[in-house]
Image 1 (tube, rainbow, N blue to C red):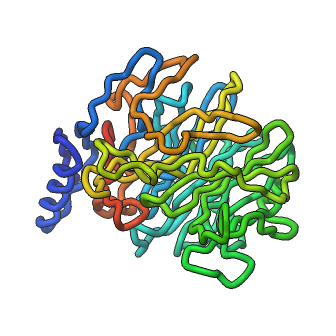
Image 2 (cartoon, helix red, strand yellow):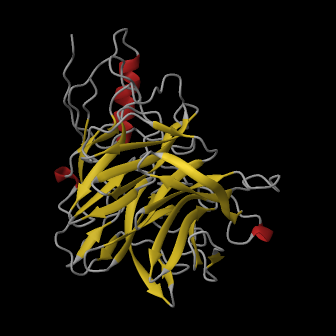
Length: 407
């Protein structure tokens, strides 16, 4: 017999206490509905024409965003939690509503025995010719795959597995042609820990198969002589006839950053921007009040009016780099100067209240943003507290305004 529980608490600590207390009972509690209220440590007054960062608060890492017509769609990582890969829709890039999960059937992926730093992370969503695509990696549970849907709310197909090494794949559409870029081992013996590369290969979207040779387009990162680490999360885009590769560099902790390369041809050579990185918080005083840290893993999207914006992950530690609510989704405008994009000038802190001109709507608060709890369980088992991709980033698995729908 299912138990029904509804309570309100002051934040993730209370959620964890509830979870630990429930673990002491022989029969685990199962929740049909759960809600709570959380309060940020920073107190921000939103001005006219402004929006509040993060746009998705709590455990919503590795955002990937697209626009289809007048709608924006976004997907986040979910690791070993089920249902996985939450899908959101928005009209203005600020107010988001969850419309489903791309992984909502155990037959799609089996997370049995997987840890919280495994399974699905850094998904990429794209759209072409009436079909939505997500490419992703299931770490220790199958490798790289693609799933498709006619409706982003679902249902999404079972995975079609893609035979290449590495993680963080994304699809780039160049007219009717498609390419997959991803993080992989370098085409040489790694020179140091964290030495990775970015690879590209043509993708036949009609058969969902990779075709032709795989090409290494970036080795190591911006400057291999400086031993850059963990070049990952790549995305390709095209603007004014040039090809741009953006990628995360430096690892997903405090040294995280976003960098950009440019080429005249899709297969390169890709030249790094002299002003890299185009986003980072690593040079700021770590003792500053209410810091936002670990910014990176960005993806660009262009509005109907030609504006460019970037979604990316960052964290809000409460002390000494510690944070309970995981990595969150932030939004900032992209500025183009001399043929290069910039998200945030060096040494500039990510703003909690940011200006958005020509905004069609403003954020109305987390209470109006319906989210579904990502639970570390399969149907029929008890939900467990969640944890973010890396072990230093523990989280309760819930965000403000969350609703638990774990059966």
